[in-house]
Image (cartoon, rainbow, N blue to C red; front, side, top):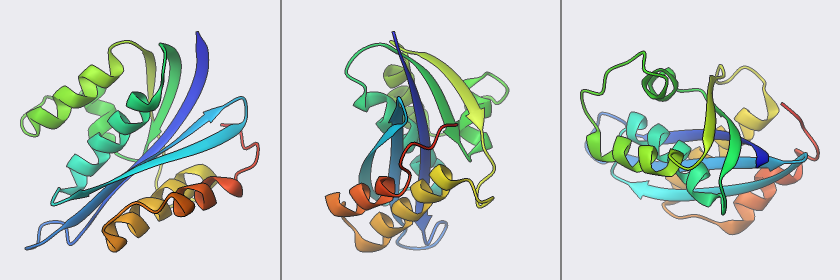
Length: 152
């Protein structure tokens, strides 16, 4: 099995207000090289965007892998490790469960906005996609180009 690192982040601009604009981004690292994937979600909460970001990264993997997944969402990490109960967002959790089932996933919380290069790149890309209302492939390429061979 390949060892892969995923750093993911979700963003919901206007979360809790009339018309939120949400996006999910996952940066996948393999042998020090990084690839970015993202999706504009439209109307979704911040928590839903965080769940979607983790699912997006896992869905991108073409074969079963050992995955170290990092999220700045305690909601995602604690729920997937069994510490939090699932009270809402059941359809979103089902998607993440399905995405995770063929992999061996180590769920890790990473503090957001703390200067961690990969997490900051994921956060910035998610906010830009949410703001733009669509995914720009160049934006995802730019998000990982400066990471070079960053290892976690």
